[in-house]
Amino acid sequence: MESSFDVTRIRSHFPILEQRVHDRQLVYFDNAATTQNPLAVTDAVSDYYNRYNSNVHRGVHHLSQVATEAMENARKKVARFINATHSHEVIFTRGTTEAINLVATSFGQAFLKPGDEILLTTLEHHSNIVPWQMACERTGAVLKVVPVNLRGEIDLEELAGLLTQRTRIVAVAHVSNALGTILPVKEIVKLAHRYNIPVLVDGAQAAPHLRVDVQDLGCDFYAFSGHKLYAPMGIGVLYGREELLNQMPPYQGGGEMIGSVSFEKTTYNELPYKFEAGTPDVGGIIGLAAAINYLASVGFDEAMRYEDELLDYATRKLKAISGVTLIGTASQKTGVLSFLIDNVHPYDAGTIIDHFGIAVRTGHHCAQPLMDYMGIPGTIRASFAFYNTPAEIDLLAEAIAKVKEMLT
Amino acid sequence: MTIEETGKQIAAEFELFDDWMDKYNYLIELGKGLPLIDESQKKPENLIVGCQSRVWINAEYADGKVIFHADSDAIITKGLVSLLLRAINNHTPDEIMNADLSFLDNTGLKDHLSPTRSNGLVSMVKQAKFYAMAFKAKETGSL
Image 1 (tube, chains in turn orange, brown):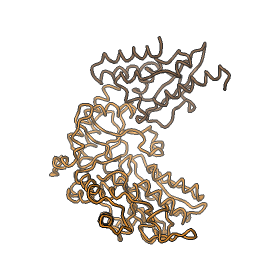
Image 2 (cartoon, one colour):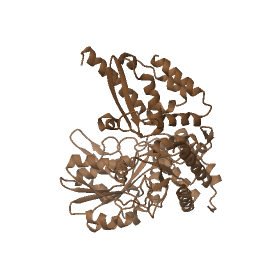
Image 3 (spheres, chains in turn purple, green):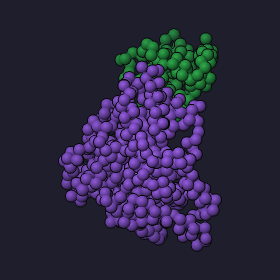
Image 4 (cartoon, helix red, strand yellow):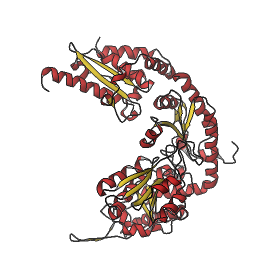
C-alpha cells in the first residue's frame, strides 16, 4: 500500500488503540459494530458536561440557552453532512434501529393497510427487518424480499419486478453490514419513485465510509448511528423528507413534541420536535457534531481513499491464504471483509484470533436470513476504519495461519 | 469422586500448561475426540438456540444417576462441553443441582462460561440442572 495518509498521526487521536490485549498490541477490526471516539469527541462531550449541561428548549436561563444553541447548531451540521434541504428534516434518535422503528411505526400507522407490501432485500440487518414485521402484524401489510446473488449483490431488474401497485415503501441498506456490499441506492430510488413509492435507506454502515448526499440519492428517509461514525453510543439520526414527515403521526408522546396539552386534546409541535419526545441526549448530539467536525479535519475523502486501499490490501492478503473463503465479493464494497476458514467454526476462529489481541466479530452479524440464504452458520468479519494499518492486516493473516495450524 | 473433586482434578491438569495456546490445543484435542452425542440426537428439541456455536444436550437417568450426552459444532466449545460432562456425569440429581462449577475459573477458560460469550455453555449448564431437577421431580412424584 502506498498512501500519503498519515495514519500515525490519526492513531494518536484515539487513545483506546494504545493498549495491550492478551499481552499483545490491540488490533481493532470491529469497526462495523462500533468505531472508537477521537479525543476531539470525548473532549467535546466532557466539555458539555463540565461547562453547559442543561435541559434544552423552554429554558430562559443562560445554560439552557447555550445547550439549546449547541444542539440546534449540531442539527444544522448534521443536515449539511448529509446535504439535507432543511435542518428540521434531521431528527435525533438513539440510533439507526430507533430511527427505522420510528418510520415503521409512524409511516405504518399513516399509510399501511391490509395487503399492502413492504419491499426489503435479503441482506438487511435485523434492524431493517423486525420493525417492518411488527408493522405488518399491526396493519396486515406483508413483506416482500429481493434476493441477493452469491456475490452478495442485488439485481435491479429483480427489484423492479417486485414493485407492485401494493408496494407502499422500499427499505434497503446502503451498505451490507455482513458483506460490505454497496447497494445501488440511487437507482433503487429512481425505480421506486417511478411509482411514487418512498424509499428508506439504512445508512448505518454507509455514513462512516461514503459521502452521503440525501438529495442526490433522492431517498425519502435515511437512518444512521453516531457510534459507527466516531461519535458516542446512544445517538443517531433519522433524515426524513419534510412533506412525508408532516403526514406522519408522532412516534412517542411526552415533553417537547407537544404544541399544547389539555386532557381533552393535545396538539403536536412542528418538525423536528414532533418526533423528539422527552429530553434528548444532548451530550451525544454534541459528540456527534464533534465527530463530523473531526472527519472534516482529517479530510473525509482522503480518509475514505485510504480505507478503500486497506480493504483492497486485506482482500488480496486473505485471498492468498489457502483455505480462506471470502464471503461477499460484490464489485462495489466498503469497510467489511467477511470470511470463513475451511473446516473451522467461526466461533473457534474468533476465540483464537482474540488471543492475538485482534478484535473481530463472529456469528450471523444480525443478518440471519442472509446467512440462511447463503447456507452458512455465520462468518468471521474484519471491519476497518481509517486508523487501521496494513501492518495490522498482516497480523490478522498471521493469526489466521495459526488458527489453521491449531484447528485443522 | 465428587463433582468438585473432578473439577479440581481438571483445574490441576490445566495448571500444567504454561500458555494459552497449549490450553487450547488440549481443548481442541478433547473436542476432536469421539462424538459425544449420537447424530440422531442432534435434533431441534435438544438444541440450545440463540448461540454462536450450537450445543445439543440430552440426558438419561438410570440407577439414581444422570448421564448427559452433549455436543457442539464448534471444537473449542465441544472441548469445554466434554470437561463439564466429565465432572457432572454419573451423579445424582441432587449433586448436579448443587454442583459448584467454578473449577473452570481455574482453568484459564473462565471467559467461555461468561453469559456474554453466547457460546451455549452457560445455557447448557442451566439445561443440565433442569434435567436433574426434572428427574428428581419425576422420581419423587412431584411432577
